[in-house]
Image (cartoon, rainbow, N blue to C red; front, top):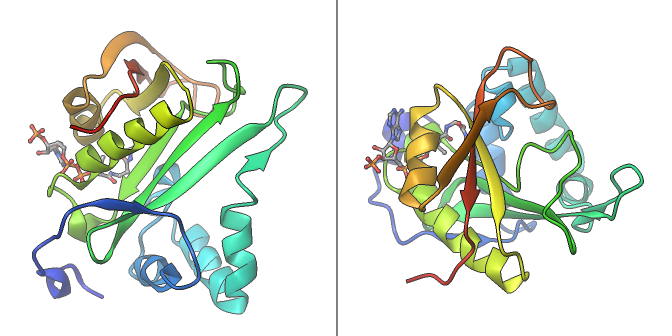
Length: 195
Ligand SMILES: CC(C)(COP(=O)(O)OP(=O)(O)OC[C@H]1O[C@@H](n2cnc3c(N)ncnc32)[C@H](O)[C@@H]1OP(=O)(O)O)[C@@H](O)C(=O)NCCC(=O)NCCS
């Protein structure tokens, strides 16, 4: 797939739980070189490895992506992860919500309650902004009052996505999940109803 192949006008954005039926969109994105992990963007070995794993055993790959939504992080309460595909009639990227029931805290290696990535050929259509808005509605349904979201200081696009969703900057600094010299912006987000 090339970026030019995808000139189809985008439909409204929805969030889809990953399943075997829509896994082929994710597969095509990997095959085009997209990394689902923004910190590994451009890491061809990682992306090729993921693609190989997917093609070897699709069901198992999917299980690994969504282990059952929960895993234990150290001695704290289990970390719940809700992963969704960003979808406009085609695969556009992914967004996840991570939280521990009954607390705002997260394990130190988890960089905020929300992570997202849009494939390059679907960017600048408002997809990440809309996906985050939809995710905030889901977070409200989970009973979460306030989320922390981080972006690299120089990630203008991600910063705009957060600001468009009324993110409130409260801190600047590194995060244990990344290099000590990578300065991040920390924002509060208020889960709410989609308008
Ligand atoms: C950050 C990212 C998810 C944005 O996705 P997107 O769907 O293109 O975002 P949107 O279309 O909703 O754009 C939101 C705003 O960012 C702006 N924007 C988008 N890409 C931009 C870019 N490369 N440079 C500057 N601004 C950009 C848009 O113009 C828009 O601004 P506006 O609100 O003033 O109109 C996408 O660039 C991406 O996946 N990047 C790599 C992974 C990543 O950085 N993830 C976030 C980790 S915190």
